[in-house]
Image 1: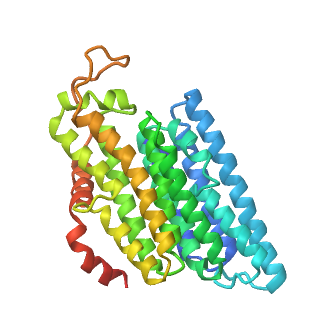
Image 2: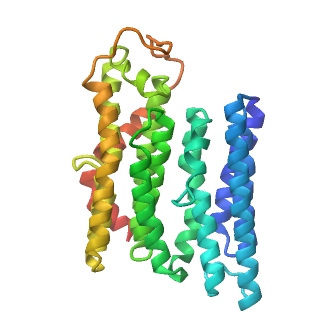
Image 3: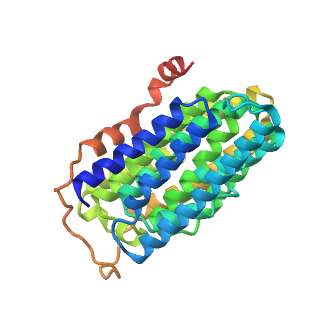
Length: 348
């Protein structure tokens, strides 16, 4: 892609998110979301592969539907209350419609069906943008309006997403689909606690972005998109394989690693709010997700791949790409747990 065009598209991505962050009026927020969608569409379709074009079309139609619902919900709210301010979302119908639209935008279950299919058709860097940057603007709107939305709806969305994210990833062999289901499960954790402690949602979103970036950049470095090629990476770069296994365990939320922090704090908050059953369901759903991360780790580090693989094995890791972002994200993914008190203090 032409570097000037790429610069314009990436600047537009930044502009759309910033516009939604800074807006207090519904139309400006909607405009920011639209700029975001229109900026990432050419990035998704840049390889002109049929799968990429199909994924772009699915993504565009889904996001356009969600944007239309947001516009309709804000207009309904303005009609009922005379207010265009984001924080004055008092009409119950507009509330529910708005939350449904944003759930569709970020891929919360049961509005998640587009997410794995779209992710599968993209290259790893565009998939990384879709999994991380594209979540920021809708989450800014959800956090601003969470206190007005029906708590039962938020709880249902959260629990369903963690369960679907766990179950969906169990039998996958495509790594991008696994990361898509991982994204759905993490979104569920963020939504479940947003009505009680929005700062925990921000901490969970931050750690999710760090861990997912490390996972995508690792796959990009080792040129891997399938479980069968992941099993052959140990022979090319054993150290990268070892850190990848730890990154995946961090995504699963194992204690010595960063990924344990948001899950621990969210379960603690749910228990404080006298919701032990929901906390138990969430913890069990996290175990389901942990199973498929362990499956990936097992395939990578504890099995020796057969010599005849169906795919072309790139025996030498390409060194043309910079490894500094990967190193930084991996360090953050593995070692931020001792910083929990500091992060909590900064967030509150």
